[in-house]
Amino acid sequence: MKASDLFVKALENEGVQYVFAVPGEENLDLLDSLSRSTIEVVVTRHEQTAGFMAATWGRLTGKAGVCLATLGPGATNLLTAAAYAQLGAMPMFMITGQKPIKRSKQGQFQIIDVVDLMGPITKRTSQVVSGSTIPARVREAFRVAEEERPGAAHLELPEDIAAEDTDALRPLAPSYTRRPIAEGKAVRHALELLRGATTPLLVIGAAANRKLTAKMLRAFVDEFGVPFVTTQMGKGVIDENHPRCLGTAAVSADDFPHRAIEASDLILNVGHDVIEKPPFIMETGARKVIHINFAAAEVDPVYFPHAEVVGDIANSIWQLKEGLEPQPHWDFGLMTKVREHMVRHIRELEGDPAFPIKPQRLVRDVRDAVPDEGLIALDNGMYKIWFARNYNASAPNTVLLDNALATMGAGLPSAMAAKLVHPERDVVAVCGDGGFMMNSQDLETAVRLGLDLVVLILRDDAYGMIKWKQKQMQLSDFGLDFGNPDFVAYAAAYGAQGHRIEESEALRPLLSQCLREGGVHLIDVPTDYSDDDRILSRDIPEHIRAL
Image (cartoon, rainbow, N blue to C red):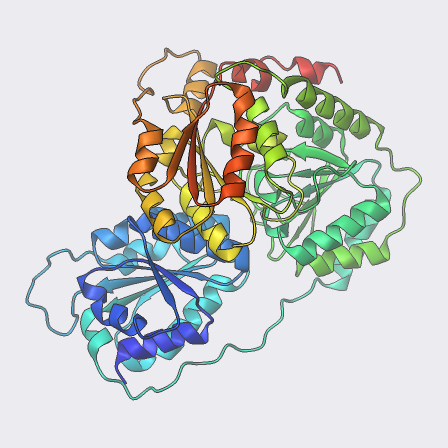
């Protein structure tokens, strides 16, 4: 059997449905083998898009998404997506080509050490040096990518190895495995701390964004009334309309969730680790913290928990729930006030009729137009803070944002992958003009795939988040403005439908109409961030002083 055929059989054995790809000369044998496979090859217009789509596929399914690129520049274009998956705990498997390793007539042309390059940003990387090793190498790559903590794995398949004959005839079947559960003594110690606390608080992070964990956490909150705050990547684990929800830690400090954290004397930190921007900073002698996660805590100057419950998170929460009873001395009075002020503050601002549209109005209108099970995929920019802060997510993994690598350019590719995973659900990409233009060429891919997708471009003609930081630092306004194409015409050039709103009231009905019609729609939304400093800055916390 040809080695590339065996490689594809190994992918089929892992249940792979899509390979997101920008193939090159060194992948041609593998591409030929894929042409006879049940696996669909999705050709993208940039390797970064292929990587972001594979990572998002992994995030939503728990199975490693697969992407393919050639050697040299093809491989280097995957690096940002590799880091995105690795830091964001998204299972992803990258395949890159290479010149023949047994005999080459091209010297060092295009050759860089891709395996060494991938080392710092993957869980495992290696070169296939013999076709007979393919079953083990592919199985191990998927195992490593998918096991806790998930991340990126990489294999380099040289051109001559892909073309050779091999006597290894079949892939290796995945073994039956279960996640370890937390040790009983650790659970009992956590229960003692909970019983002794006065104002316990749940902080819910990215690793809790799983359906069974969400179910267990909801049952825990409903039974004991313990309030919760989420990180940005923990949004939607519990419906954020829940009366015990105290918001998302979207701003660095001094917002409503931070006031709740300050009021707590014990934090159950569920599914959060220091790779995601910390929602709180630990100090010696302050409140106690229980780390509840699949893996032990990575000790950091801002994070050194007092107790750890290490094992399957859903089972750990179930064990805590079964061993606990409501405590009469628990006092959530101040936290209840935090929620009351938070809800009132958000509602006061979300009806602003000004145009260009203000972000708080924008978030409300998107929330009203997108069904509870619909997905929004955010790029990285100023608006990400607003959506994290003001958009109430109703279900796990319905707000796809990145607060680990926090890269620009992932919004459109993530939305495309989300639509492939959930074709029956509405999907909206929310992008700034800066981030959108980094991978905007893959509008053509979305049109070619026949996706039903809406892309909102929040246009301020600048790198808005950095301008905000520049202003906070009292520096001059310099170096962050740019021009943009006519986005309506730009969409039409790719075969999509382009729209531009001329008043704030037009956004919600237009977005609803686009979701109903289907096809690829792009909406140019002029956006005004001028109030960000007044509302979000730590220097002007009037809404916090009211508490």
